[in-house]
Image 1 (tube, rainbow, N blue to C red):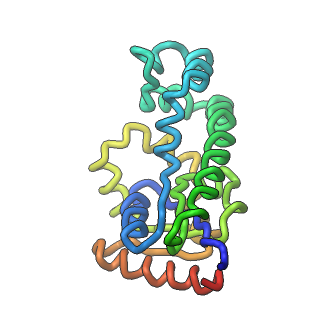
Image 2 (image 1 turned 30 degrees about the vertical axis):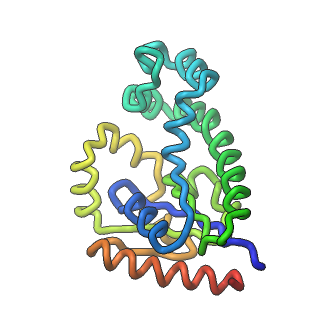
Length: 201
């Protein structure tokens, strides 16, 4: 039996990555969000202690890391952002590989194992995947979606991300998410079928 396709999903803020991830799960993939992994890692005592030592107790009031407060401290300075990424990205990569191994043993086998990685290409993680999907959308639509989600540090996050065009150029598949969820799901279904066929499944 061919291996389950291992797929990285990425896109800019407001492009619809989370909606795409949910759609892929409904279509028969098993899915993982690295954003959730990072959220969980901030509850790890060693990670929390390192963050507090670097940025001060105000980023972890009541012993819990405040991600917005941490972003305000870490994102403006490249050296602070690099330090935080070096703290988190190796842990994220290791957790993703453990999850992949678990997914490979599922019975019945899923159509694919898909990991949402907002900074997929920026972190250099694309090499571990069999295929990558970039979700893109009209810039005004992305801005409106991001505003509805109240991103307090959108500018800082965008500053460290590749442009949509760069993500699309580097991805195996590109999904334009300017329409309905039904249309998004239909296009993702075609991409999943293509990836499965390419893997010999």
